[in-house]
Image 1 (cartoon, rainbow, N blue to C red):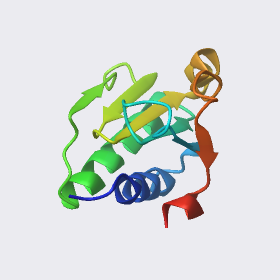
Image 2: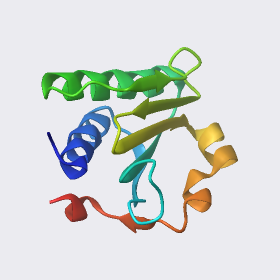
Image 3: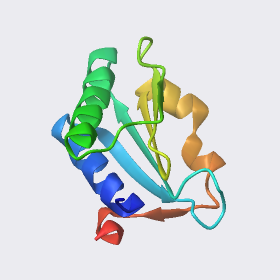
Length: 117
C-alpha cells in the first residue's frame, strides 16, 4: 500500500497539469484521525475544477488507487475526493474564500511539495 506522501505527490502532479491555483498541502496527521494530508486547490471556473478532479481520478486510478468517495462533482464549486489518508479539496475561487479551510485547519502543518519527498 502506498504512503499518503506518494498519494499526495500523484494528486498534486495531476492538479498542476490542469493549472491548479494556489495548491496548499496541510499535514494534519498529528491533529486528526481523518487523514494524514489535506490538499486544497482552486480552479478559476467550473470546467477547470472538474478537469482537475478528472485528472486526479485518472492518475490515481492508473497508479492503482481508487477514491473512497467523491462529492460535489456535479456542482463543481467544491469537489471533495477522499482517498483515506489523503483528502483533496478542489474549489472554485469564491467558495475557497468563503469556506477558508486553511484557517479552519491552521493547527495543521502547512508543508511544501519538498516535504513529500
